[in-house]
Amino acid sequence: MSLFDDIVHDKQNIDYTKAGLLPIFVTPPTAEILIIGQAPSLRVQSSGIMWHDASGERLRHWLGIDDNTFYHSGKIGVLPMDFYYPGKAKSGDKPPRKGIAETWHRQLIAEMPNIKLTILIGAYAQRYYLPIDKKETITHVISEYRIFLPKYFPIVHPSPRNNIWLKKNPWFEADVVPELRRQVDHILNH
Image (cartoon, rainbow, N blue to C red; front, top):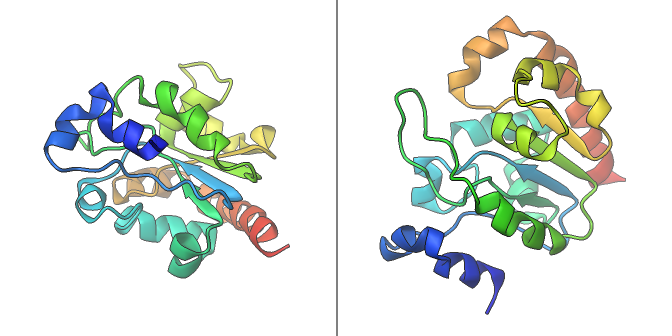
């Protein structure tokens, strides 16, 4: 049985499996860049295609890559903190369920031995993977992204919900995004 099958049959996921939903992640053995985000959106859960929504369009723009490279090159892995859409909260989506990353990430990452850069999208991924204080703001973590290189590159979630944050922090698109593109280009084209 594959890891995918193990995840489908995991007791934590049984309600999703009974509803006919499959876990959403992509872990090609040829991946050189790994993207770890929060959880699939409802649209992504429905389509079964990672980052197949407005957030994904912005993410690919920030990365400086086209849809073909993102989806078909085999160089991009995508591993959310939760493999299923967690449902709606008062503002935005519910957080990813606890225990999913702890149970599955290490095994799935081991299937991608060529990862050169892991892009951590949002607070859940950053707090799980980076040695930061739980009280640290995402703004501070992202502004200090250089200290986490070359292994990790923390960025804000590309959701349209973060437009206000982007307006308040113009340095992100002016300074961080160009460096993100340089890092991605160097890995994919050299």
